[in-house]
Structure formats: structure tokens, C-alpha cells
Image (tube, rainbow, N blue to C red; front, side):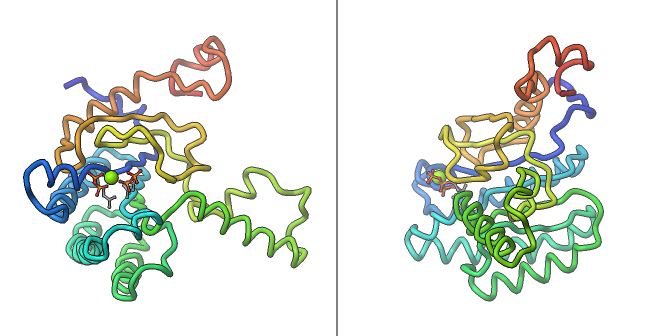
Length: 251
Ligand code: IPE
Ligand code: IPE
Ligand code: MG
């Protein structure tokens, strides 16, 4: 395995964890078994990212659109989520990881919200990695809700329209306070964003792998991160300008 340069890791890694259902169906198992196995991959990625010193890890766990799945699958996913949070909170404390949630929490069942609140409160003082779970999250929903909140502040006279900048708008998003993701991994071979972090992914490096989420391994994570380290992030500049400033990734 190629060694990774610890100074050139993404500050913020985001993941669209996809392919649990297909993983299960290929094995004649119920889709929920794929989600259960996917939860094991979550544990591995959380542990590895925190060990490597990645500061922010954001996982797309349930989209606004996933509410349209069969009720049985939605219920099973909510139960699994609750179980996962309950089981993992002690480990998050040991690893100094702080929980954060983005998405429309008012759509989540009360018991899930209670479990989330308890985990968020318990880990609030942790100073290591920030683990953000995107739950009932949709990028367009987040953007329109942010626009509505900002419009209310304009109407209330707290914000002057001519003072609206990309930075100010960013503070109205669920992700206010988090840096934009540097790197996005999506598993299962689908090459789309599926309404994830539409605003925040503006300059994110994208990585797609055919591997289904339950089969995603430490080696694959390293391979993806090695790929990230080989990229030149130009942010609109020329390659020459970037090289002058001390090589790739230092833009
Ligand atoms: C990702 O796996 C998990 C969630 C979206 C909750 P999927 O359940 O989407 O798996 P596929 O895409 O059907 O294989
Ligand atoms: C995206 O996966 C959402 C999550 C990973 C939670 P989906 O499997 O729901 O995406 P689409 O609908 O196939 O694009
Ligand atoms: Mg899917």
C-alpha cells in the first residue's frame, strides 16, 4: 500500500455510503442485512479517519428522498441508526470524537431524536474529529431553508441585502461552522451527487468506486486518499500559479 502523507490528508472527508441494498440482494439476503453490514464499515471508516487525524468526517446516512422507500426499510434503518448511536457513543468518548447532525431533524422519529440529542450532548466537549451524520438531509432542502431564514433576517432589518455574500449565506446552512469537504467518496459505482451538500461540494475532489459500501475496506480507503493526494487543486488558477506556492494541494 502506498504510504500517505499525513500533511496532505483532506481536512474534511465526506462519504456517500451507497450499495448496501445491492450488496445484500447479490447474496440473496434482505436489504436490511446490507445496512447492518454497512454499519460495520461505518465503524471502520470513523476509526481510521480519526486515527489519521482527519478533522471532519461527514457521512450521508439517510436522504430526504429516502423517506420514499418502503416503510419497513425506513423503520429498520431508523432502528439501526438508534442502535448504532447508542452502541458507539462510549467509543466516541474514548476517541474524543464529537457528534454533529445535519438535515431536517423534525422529520425523524422522537426516539431517534432523543438518542441523537443524548449523543450530541455527551460528546459536545470532545475536541477531536467532528463526525457529522447527514440524516433526512437534502441539499436543495437545506438551501431553500437557509434562504428562508436569511429572508426573515432581511425583513427584520438584521441583514441588508447588499451585504449578502457567499460567506454570509454559508452561515445560514446546516453546515455553518464546518469547512467545505476537500474530498468526497461515493461507493457502489453510481456517479451522481444525489442531492448531497450541493453548495459545499463546489470545489470538492470527487472519487467514485464500484465497491459496495459493506465491502469497502481500509485498503480501499487508503487507495482513495492516495488518489486525493495525487491531485492538483487549482481553484480556478493555473497550474503554474499553484506550483509557485509550494506544490499541489497547497492552493
Ligand atoms: C445506501 O445503500 C444506504 C442508504 C441510502 C440508506 P442503499 O440502500 O442505497 O443501497 P442500494 O443503492 O439500494 O444498493
Ligand atoms: C444516497 O443514496 C443517500 C445515501 C447514501 C444516504 P441513494 O441510494 O438514496 O441515492 P440514489 O437515489 O440512488 O441516487
Ligand atoms: Mg443506493
